[in-house]
Length: 360
Image (cartoon, rainbow, N blue to C red; front, side, top):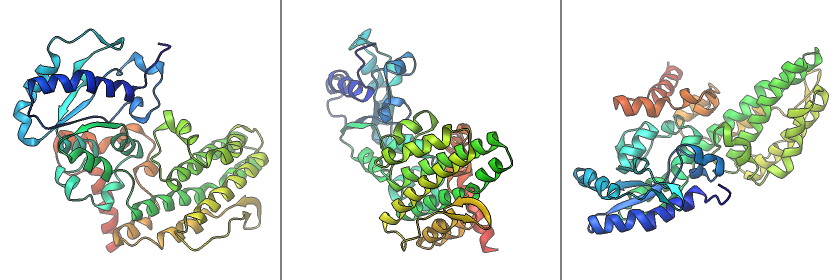
C-alpha cells in the first residue's frame, strides 16, 4: 500500500477506536494495560508497506492482573464479537491480539521466573538476553496501563545495568583485539577473500561497540545496518566501514579499519568510564599491520566492574549471548526452554558453570 500507516500508529488507533470501547462496554471495571511490544518490525519502527504481507496489522497485547485470568475468555469474546472485515483498510485478525499477564509474557520471553521481574534481575541474567529481545520488550508503545506493572517492567529493561554494560563493551573490544591483526595477515599472504571475511567481522564488531557506547540495543541482522545509521556516530564512521567492507585490497581495508578504530577509541574516552587511553594505532609487534590494541580497552573496562561474578566471567572473554553466537535459534533458546519447562534457563546455567569454574 502506498499510504502505509506505521504499525505503532495503526495499533494506537486500534486500541483507541476498537479495543478500548469494546472493553469499556463489556468490562467497565476491568483494569488492564494495552501495548504493542514483542516481535515485529513495527515494534522497532522499521516496518514498511512490504511488512504488511505477513504477521502484520492492527493489533495490541492486553495485559490483565493475575486475579482477572478467569475473565480471559470473556475478554476475548468481547473483542471477537462482530469483528469488522478491516480497520483503516487493513484486515483485522483478532487472534493477533493476545490477552496475558505481565509476569507470564515477559517471564517467558526472557526465560526468567516472574518473581525476578519485580524483585530484580540478577546481573548474570542480563547476559542471557539477546539485544533484539530487549529492544522488542523495551520498545514499541504503551497505550494504556491501569495496572502499572507493564510500565514498571518496560522501564526496567530500558538498558543494561552499568556493570553489564561495561562487561559487554569489554567483550567486544576483546573480539576486536583477537582479530584486528588477522585481517592484514591474511591479505599479506594473498588471501583477499579471507581478509575480507575477517574485515566483515571487525566491521560488525565496531558497529556493535557503537550501539553499546550510545546505549542502544542492537537489533538482529535485518535491521542492524538500518538502526546503525540512526546512531550519532554513524555519519563519521560509515565511509570507513563501507570502504573496509567493499574494497578488494587489504591495504585499503586496513587503513579504513584503522581510522574506524581510532574514532571508537575516542568515543570510549569520551564516556569517561576509564582513564583516557591512547587512541592511535600502532604496528603489531614487528609486523607491518596497524592495530588499536582492543585488549587494552577491554582490560580498562573490566577493571571498573564492581560485581565479583561478572569480573570472574570477564576472564573468559566470551561476553553475553550476542557475542557468543550469531545463530538466531541459539539466541532464542532461553525463552523457548523456559516457556516449555518453566525450569532453569540453560544459558544462565552455562554462565553459572563458568563462574563456578573460576572458583576452583
